[in-house]
Image 1 (cartoon, protein in one colour):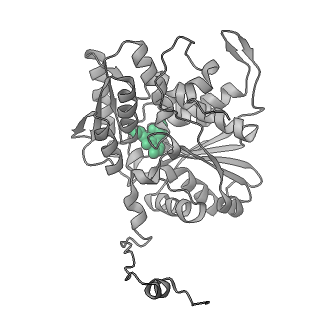
Image 2 (cartoon, rainbow, N blue to C red):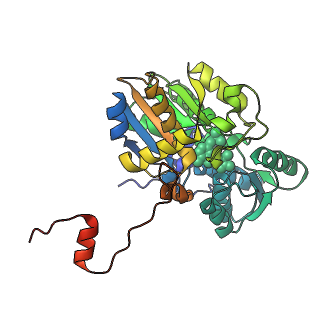
Image 3 (tube, protein in one colour):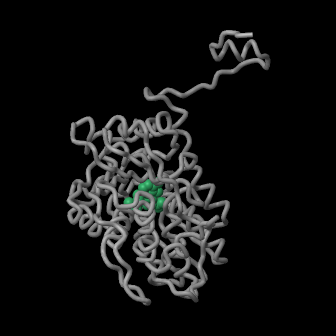
Length: 367
Ligand code: F0G
């Protein structure tokens, strides 16, 4: 049986690496493409979920981090830095540990989930809670990397998008061709840019050192990106100075990959729209309770977008739709313990006897 070797080794001929590259990997990628039964039934399309929470640190960031950390090692870096709403820092901390280099992370004070914070701490990152938002953190991280001996591993580093484009390759490799539509959450806008790059590269001849690779896909999908309403600069057309949403992972007011995301939208004939926090939480509950897929709130923005479009009668029918769900539900589990009306879920308590348990479950005795 084939053992998955991580995205760099699996897609080496389409990445800026050579045989002598010292690869830093935790075996990322190769994530499940799960058919979404309930969403398919609702929309009359074939809907699939690319479940990126199944990466080593629980989010899609690992695809880019294997490339960024490999580049850091190649550059002889002794330390890396990133700004993060949580997932990038968790990933950077883990991959830096694997690489044997130190890692500093700048996170917005009080606005990152416990799960992500614990990961960065567990992996020994130097974690600084910055009195500012993500955009402020990224600004400082960039300046730090310019003037001090630290290597920047945010997605402004092109190696990150190179790694992340492999998710599009995997989708095509699983389906046998590109889907008609690809939906995903948009925050700092690296991921939508990376998917679009990957889909374009797979639909055209690709020049490598050893010659030209034939196209793998016959087409590219229409890209639909979704931002949280309170943090939707790409929808508004200008930066947002005080971004706000419960989906802390995408609480970003001035995305670094702005132009690339707009190009992905326009070249694919797609759109970037906003979904409200309530719509995000509804999609989060839909995924947990109807598809069996547990994600963190931001990860549900793409599904929220499809549900919203369906509500408006504008969801594609009879098409193949892939939605990336970007991070694992265990990153930020508190949202599962809250009902739709905002009250806390209280587990039912019982005595340790079978009659009490059966009664609590509403079961009638059969024998
Ligand atoms: N979903 C999750 C779970 C994320 O963590 C992020 C970004 C996104 C979606 C948006 O992806 O930025 O490429 O448009 N998180 C970054 C971080 C900002 O620091 O972890 P994007």
